[in-house]
Length: 250
Image 1: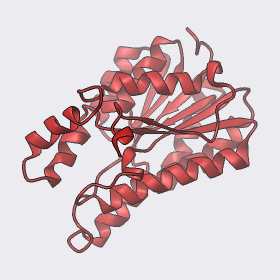
Image 2 (image 1 turned 120 degrees about the vertical axis):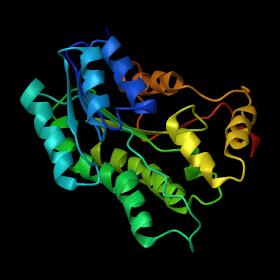
Image 3 (image 1 turned 90 degrees about the horizontal axis):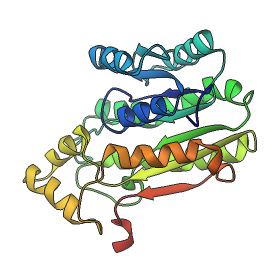
């Protein structure tokens, strides 16, 4: 119960990596504010976790919604000890085929939303000892993929934002970034639609790792919980690839 009496805010909590992260925090005793767009999935997750979790449906690309998340956290629990930011979309298409509005939406959801959340949350985080933020980027920040211009650009922006924020807000708040590789979530199957044979693309993504499998959401949750814990008290401004060894082959 390493997070007993601590409160975390998890975005993108209704599926994939965000859901696994929320469940892992709950198992370690944390109080949770959960964010997502799927109201039923959010309600189901709260029912699973129990009375120390609350869900607020909304769009993270809306600045006022991010403030509402922080306000709800303080109202329900009186404190905010950490954030795990996971919300993301793809925005598939080449530069010439991608609609401008889809480009802007992807940047808003993936990158601008984290700025909005940090802007609202950092004053509360600075009040707490050992506060932490973990931002979920992607190896797409370093390794490009066909027909993913908005996704790659937004994920690279998250890496830079996390490092810069760590400089401005240390030592009171530790801010780190994780860059997952191919993880078995709904998003990887959506991403594979950019390839001629989506099913084969997902299969090959797992085989292309040195571990010879796709990552699991729990693999990612394990790293996030470590970075949020006191065991990582000397880690900030860092970027962790967690990709089964994909980037080691480049």
